[in-house]
Length: 334
Image 1 (cartoon, rainbow, N blue to C red):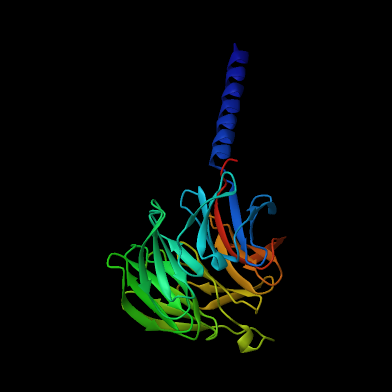
Image 2: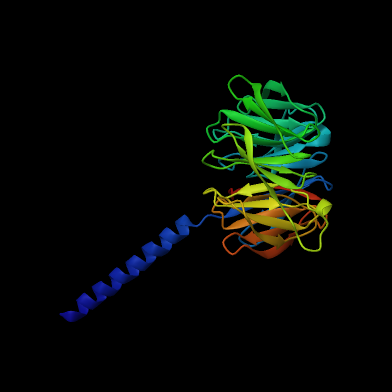
């Protein structure tokens, strides 16, 4: 009479193991990185599990700013010399349409509802607003000379646009579509990023060589973080891209021709580490689980993969010519 019980117990164990395996498989998510290659007019498609390039998408002239829709169905890339933003279907990896971006689009940001896209027009000194549902321009705001960085506040009420030559951050009211404040920053501000809780705005200054920590409510600079790397002249340290973890505890600042990514404590703003990457590191993106940070190295034609928890570069992947930006989303069925 004991044997049936043993078989029943063994069957129960097998069932539990199978259910656990199925649950694990269901929870596993694969991610795809899209890397804009400014000189080769292409996007490299990277499997972040295999850590290799699995495809190339041809684009218009001079692709730079790149983002994905929140559901990962579309990849948007600013092709500056063609004065448009191309829409790429992530399932087919084909260009599926274009957006009226205004002159020389560079960086842009998409609101949390995938409703509006805000793009900096470097040549015309404007911020163009595009309705993604209708694919039409619905507004344009005059800003400073050579606008570049674009960031949307977590409450979606303010868009910040940095202007390089004017050395300012412009605070734009989303509802009124007008500038409601300006803040003078270090020379040649490039990228801007809000903490997820909205408590701070971080802005890099390429020529100024610093990172401004801004109180977005008061629209005042609280602190300027400076970077120093033994053996490098100050002018070689040019902060450009920023990536902040969702919990706000760490920031990664890309230092251009210094070939380093600085790790900054999100609370104390102390520089914790300098990570050696490829040549002329520009912009980057986290995998959605924030396990890895991928950064584009424009002069060495590769991307560096950073293990976020270990603060360590673990891989280099060759891509196209002059990689500029990276966007990452869950992999779509093809």
